[in-house]
Length: 484
Ligand SMILES: *[C@@H]1O[C@H](CO)[C@@H](O)[C@H](O)[C@H]1NC(C)=O
Ligand SMILES: *[C@@H]1O[C@H](CO)[C@@H](O)[C@H](O)[C@H]1NC(C)=O
Ligand SMILES: *[C@@H]1O[C@H](CO)[C@@H](O)[C@H](O)[C@H]1NC(C)=O
Ligand SMILES: *[C@@H]1O[C@H](CO)[C@@H](O)[C@H](O)[C@H]1NC(C)=O
Image (cartoon, rainbow, N blue to C red):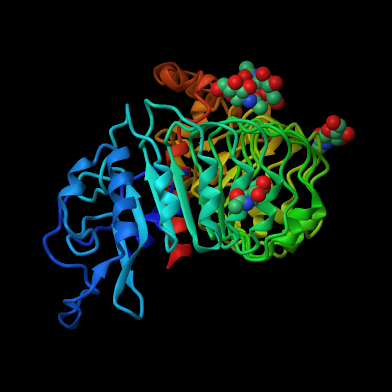
């Protein structure tokens, strides 16, 4: 089942960015029948056939999705299509182990569903060997709850993907009976109610994605030793992030963004030594900044924006462990006080967003040392003093350097600012006052310049997400790197 594995990887790693662009296929054939026999039907297997009860069940399941054509196939494991996988037992009887539905891309497609009429047939429970069940965009115009009978698939099922299907109602507690599930993906449905406690029975869960639903209640108490993907983003969850999050040491990606979570970030997150992405943005989390962040030694992206933490950025050595941190997004958090000099010692930083806070003091000179820095937003703060960048740095960052609406920032002409450098001028930053005579003529020149550049002068009203594509590209790269 190499196709499905790759598809799942793409689903799991990329949804932040582009939902489905890269789907690996093992052939270009769409949902039509594949003529060739199932790979495991070798020459010696001519007598092999599919278990007749499972065959009848597959016919029912196919009919329920509008794929009645399948009933013309004398042996479903032999005349196979993309989306069915079978395995022989020791008596050469074939069993259905995987069923997948939904057009993933133009050139790789599992059987598509009739979105207005499809439903999940209870005959699914007659496939006792089923390991993978995958429905993508299947029931969108025939909204239905996730059937409770799926729980009867018991300990055999390993992967359950019900993605963008328009499912309504609660997540059935019966899914907790799927005790050997590794992947549970219910992304982008219309599920409501709370996340059932019974899911905690699934000890071997590796990926839990219930993002983009309307789930309420609290983040479940977690105790998943091998969980690596945990995505509850874009729901209506309330309450705090409990310290049980520390019981998931294998976490690689944690996304709880865009909920209504409150309270502080627990110190136990310091246990998450494999965490690469932490996105807790747009909740109501409170301060202070947890020192424990500093022990997240694998972290590459820290995204906390839109939580009014009303805190200072801790200036101690809490960054010491974060040698791989590339992306730090701390916008709009009511942060105050100085930007710690130690930030400039995070060697991998490429993107820093500290905009729309109340930070004061100067831009740390250590920022000059960030050789990979390509995007810096410090706009809408109360920063003062000299901008510590040489001309080349300013030029390289261009409009990704945002400093506007900081009343006290100025640029030292000796650093080589020239007329062709838009960003600082656009930001309304003037030359620093010096004791020498430079200021009068410069001011005049500067205002002329502002005049014919007026298109960019009012940049404080620029859309918040204007250049977030850049961030997304970085995130994309980051996740590809981490797959390899
Ligand atoms: C599955 O789980 C539910 C609730 O969690 C329970 O009531 C039921 O008896 C379990 N067993 C089966 C076979 O569904
Ligand atoms: C879930 O949504 C349905 C309507 O789709 C509604 O009838 C039901 O009360 C909701 N349940 C909860 C727990 O919000
Ligand atoms: C920053 O603001 C705080 C109070 O908000 C003040 O005590 C401190 O002196 C300010 N620091 C600078 C460098 O302006
Ligand atoms: C400037 O930034 C402050 C936050 O430090 C903000 O409250 C204010 O609205 C901004 N001014 C403009 C003109 O955007």
